[in-house]
Image 1 (cartoon, rainbow, N blue to C red):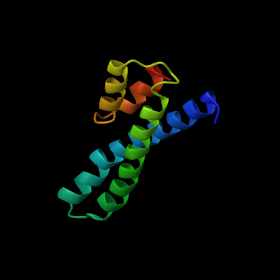
Image 2: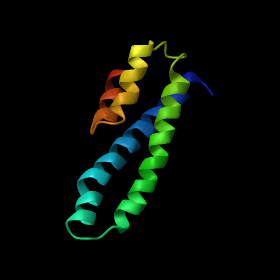
Image 3: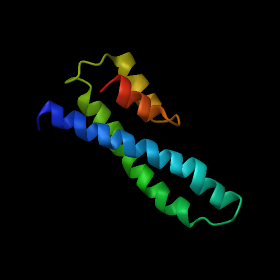
Image 4: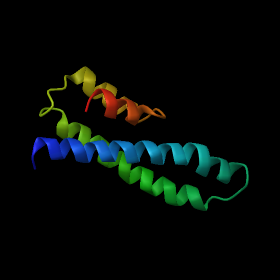
Length: 94
């Protein structure tokens, strides 16, 4: 797969992972713990888990082709744990 296509796929995964994380934190979790409706956590949580794994694999996959150093890779991986972090990675590193 060409590098530009790999970057485009990772960009979409990064955006979707960020959105799923925000949905999980600000919609699904309040529904579960305030209004006792856990169904959305199950669905959004599963989607977020799959996207998170795809994000981590994608970051490791692009590590060498994009000439990131180890510190940049750690920042990119750490941003997956912070709300709005994947959007920062998408703007700064891609």
